[in-house]
Image (cartoon, rainbow, N blue to C red; front, side, top):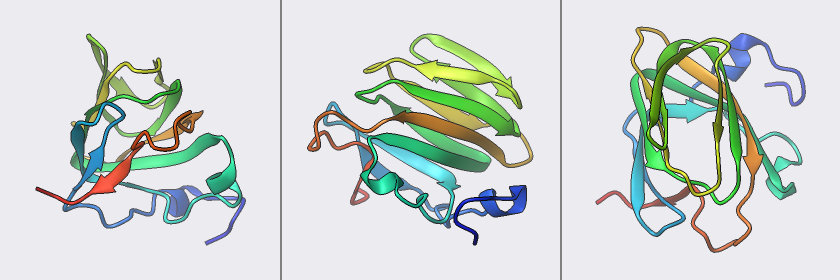
Length: 140
């Protein structure tokens, strides 16, 4: 796969995460990611940068359970449709929707459509390196 320029077929490649995995939240709780993946590799240089950026892809029925971040996050839906909830606000979103999640406010994503749902994301890495930001933990 190219490193800097991506076609839709390339960024829609799906990491095999259909079985789901459990992640550690910033408040010490855990949450699950089911039928969800993203770009196969991190973008060059992004692993040491203080910002997160990339693409998340959800298969039909894919869910990202409610969780929060230490820093603001921004999402822009580029394919498919689903439900996104930020705090108490829940809406059906599709291509062109823009979503903002403030620090510490839980948010949730679910692909309710028949096709893959994908969004670009941009946000900050946690200010506390021990915060457990999207850190995989063993399934219970």
